[in-house]
Amino acid sequence: MLGRTRSSYGLLLLALCLASPLRADQEDPAPPETPEAQEAEEAPAGKPRLDWGLEAKANFRRSEQNRFTVPFTFQPIELPVGQSRGFEETVNPGSHMEVSDVTLYADARWGDSFRAHLKLDFISLYERNPTSTGTQTNVDEAWVLFGRESGHALLAPRSGAYVKVGKFAKLERQNDRHLESYGLVSTAFNRIEDVGVEAGADFGSHFYLKGSYTAGNPVFLRDPNALAGDNGQPALLQPNPDPVLKTGIDILYDARVQDLDTGHPQGGAAVGWRTADQEGRNGVDVMAWARRRKLARTVEIQGSFYGGDLDLLNGPFDRFPFPIKNDRKRETGANLWLYLGGFSLFAQYVDQDLAGLPRTGIEGEVSWSFDLPLLWSLGERQLFSSIAPAVRYSKLDNKFRNPPQTPSPSFGWDWEKIDAGLRIGILGPTDLTLEYADNDFILGNGAHRNNNEYLVTLRWRV
Image (cartoon, rainbow, N blue to C red; front, top):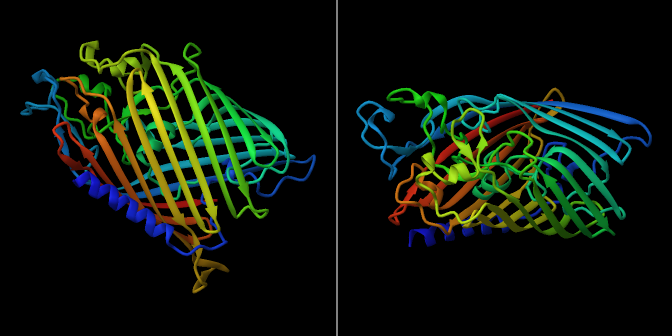
């Protein structure tokens, strides 16, 4: 009954945003490197152009404290002193001020047929996995593009093709999120960039095809809230460890590419159709996509002694496996992008077969962006120039059983998450995002539990 109530609550929030009035002055919150923004001003024909930018994020985070007993027998020396059972628990409960990231952007363009992009992250607090021992400096994106890649829900000016090489976002990812948080589906399947080559072609203004051949992101675990958590860090090998950062309540997800594993490549393909007005303020885009690869026996994860892919699914010491049946990883899905002036809707469905473990996910985000009237100014620039409320609903259905003993029972829990927030333009490129994550998951005994979080993000860009 509670699960149905929460589903209705999520649908009601989506409906409220859908009922909001629409405007034609749609905000584009995406960084300038995304395909959605590429139809902006072109460099003069035959002349190269180089742009750069710097972005910093400071955060206030308040995480609820929760812990859940795991059905796994640990040795006494493996647990904190006085503790007889193991737990999955909130990574870092309480209220905290932190700087989550500093990012350097660089973009080069030569006419309309060559682009290069670099996105370099320092600190990477909310992407680090494990949080305390993962990499702090990360080349988030680095790619070159030959040809023209048309943005979603934008008319292609003519037939054409492109090839992109390097490290880039997965072709189905939402690149214009209006909140700093991620949904369950985006976390599990396409939050992290992949490495390889992508190619695409426009056939007229509306129909397009895409394909990719990449290294493939290793399967690992993380909490879907802000901090990934600490799992398998070397400090746990000490007698009776009691780490400051806990495990998190984890889901299976596609983690950062550790190295170029040429033995387990991933192939992907997509077909789509779009239409839009000439100004690009109103448009719709629908896309079906699929990808597939073989899982590795193990993948070394930087900062953790846990292995990824099949090693993770086989459980500790390969003695407590999930009911895996093969070494295949396969996803199919469908996306919808809709833009109507200041209103935007993104929706995604994913069906996954992970070594014989089936799971499905749905996610939808609605947002309404509009300008505020001029009341105050500073240095000839408007203070509080825009506002954008947004609501995201996401759900993971895991259609497999947990093994009788596992330190990570949350892998098999069904999960719903509602993220609701507001982004306020303060001055120029500086904005403030306030949001709340409402997590609801169903334990193995059918009980509903929560692990909710408040997040405030001040973002400054030059």
